[in-house]
Structure formats: structure tokens, C-alpha cells
Length: 216
Length: 216
Image 1 (cartoon, each protein chain N blue to C red):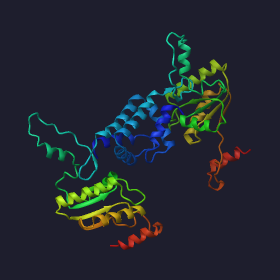
Image 2: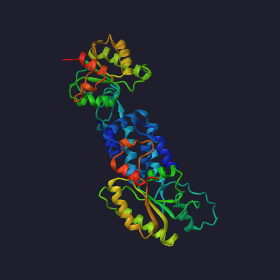
Image 3: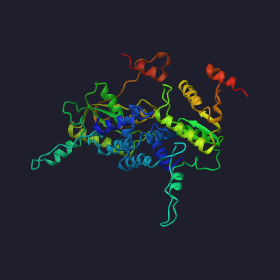
């Protein structure tokens, strides 16, 4: 294979969900789209650099710089802080005492789509399979603890650990339960059961057991 | 969703094999990789612009510009032509009289991996599902005809129509058979049969029928 193709395949097959075969196909596909389309795609990637990380929930978000008149008062420190907050964290209509801890932004988007959660989030980042929180995740939990101390006089109403119900998800959830037990009146996890549209016959024992425990 | 994410998802979910869900996941993944990695990925895409199209088989290929001493004779026209040829077409060890017509570069790569084909190729480009060759494909077939007239005194030894054995592949193969019948002593297609490792029990009627016809 020729050099830029090889480079492209190397880079793209290291991304989640893209294998070398699909990367090769993509490379030739993009080449055949032509220069303008290649530029557009490259711009879309570079555009990700303009995203910010929310200082409260650590979600990735985008905010246009507000137009400021020259000479207008800026209230620098407050303004800067507000700029770092995502639309969920800066929304005063949302219940700050209700916190969902999720692994990644796509989980947040899924929860938002249910329109059943009016609290705030903490994005933890991808969990390691060895059931140990990494240093970034520890810092984020500590930041959550600080904000609970500062804004909620030390105790949140409820923390929902919205982590996938997998083996290592369970291990990590137990770790967090232990870490956060003094910081919330209630700590919960998402209910387990048979997915809507699913069939009892095909549910595994754990799922069916969870569905029995959660019967209502 | 925030703007650069939305832009990224729009662009990437239009690529083959990537849906909006995977594109969203990729966007957050890339953002979290950080600026340097984003740049590397963008460079890998822009690098595709340096690829050339072979003037003989229309495959995408890459060739470093040969270093030329100032004042050295250039033999401009010949040199330029050779520069446009891919490594397969410029390889004098390969049999120019044996031509495989394929849809895309990945098919070429698959055939090369068998190490059983020592001829040259013609890349036709993705076939339309309506069984009609588009203008680019017609131009490429005409270019093949011209090169057969010029280099092989009007008749190739064999043309292998290496198009997928699908319904519209068959329609297009018949079209090409008709177009090229005066330009080769033999026109063939790839054999049909049960894939290695496959089971007779699960083969559909057409495949099994093809396997019977191709028994050896």
C-alpha cells in the first residue's frame, strides 16, 4: 500500500470501532471524494479543538464567545467561570442536588433524551477494565465532593451512579459508592431488567434476576 | 449537541460504514485525545491529497518525486508519463496481456494478496445499482480499449471481469462483456462456489448451483 494510505490506515484503525479493513476502504473513498471534501472533513476534526471542558461536570461543550463592547464592564473572574460551564451546569432550572455520574458524553446524551432527569452530571471518563479509578477520575470525584461541600452544604439529595451494568462497571460502582457515601442522602444505580421489546425467554439469568428484584 | 460536534457528526456519518452513533462516539473520543492527536488525524486525511491516479489502471497510488540534479537531462514527456503509472502498471515483469477489471482499490489489494495474478488491472469505480455504466466508467473502458489497441495489437490475452457476483454486478458484467468482446481472446469472470470454510448446508441455491457448475 502507498504511504499516505498506510499512514491513514494506521491512524484510523486505532480509533474505536474502526478496523484496518474499514480504514482502508475509507481512505480510498475519501481520496475519490476529492480535495474539497478532504478539506471539509479535516476541518471538522480540527474544529473539535474549539470545544471546552465544563469545569463542573467535565463534559465537552461549545460556546460562542459573547460579543463584548469595548469599555463595557467585564467582571472578569465571574464571567470566565460562567464561560467554562456547559449549558446543563449553567441552567438554573436544573436540580443541583441530584447528580448522575456517567462514563462518557454519549451516556449523558442518552439520559438527556429520556427527558426524565433534571439534575446535573459528572463525566467520569472511560472506566478501566481492572476496576481501579485512574488519577483523572479520582480528581473528578474530588471536584464533585468539593462542589457538594460548597454548594450543597456537604450532602447531595441523591447521586445516581449511571455506569453500565457490566462486571467491571459493578466493581467501579462499588468503589464510588464507598468514596461518596458521606456526600449524599441516597446513592442509587440505574434499574436492571428486561429491555423494552425484549423477551423473557432470551434474557440471561442476571438480567431476569434484576428484573425480579426491580418488579413494580 | 454543541456545534463542532454536530458538524463532525454530520460529516462523518456521511462516510461509508459510519453511522451517527459511531460518529458521535468518535467526536468525543477524538476531543479527549487532545490537540496533538487531532492534528495528526487531520494530517492523515490531508495526506490523501498527495495521492495520484495511475493513468493506465486508474488506481490510487503514491510516488515520491524523484530527486533530480539540476542540469541533468530530464526527458520530460516520458518521465512525466512514467511518474503517472502505479507500481503495478510500471512493473515490466507483469503480463500486460492479462487484465483484471475491478470495482475498487480494495478489490485490487485482495486479488494481489492471493499472489495468483500477474497481470494488470483496470479500476472501474463503484458500480451503480441501476446496471448502467456512468460516464467515468465509460471513459475508463475506452482508455482500456485504446491501450489494448496500442500495446497489444488490438487483442488482450484475457480480460477477467472481477466484479462482485451480485445481481447488479452480473448486469454490469454482461454490459462489459458486450463492450469488450472484440478486445480479448477470452473474457472470464471469477469462479462462483462455496467459500473455503463454508458449509454446503448453509449455502444458498445460487451459490451451490455455481459450485456445481464450477466443480473440478
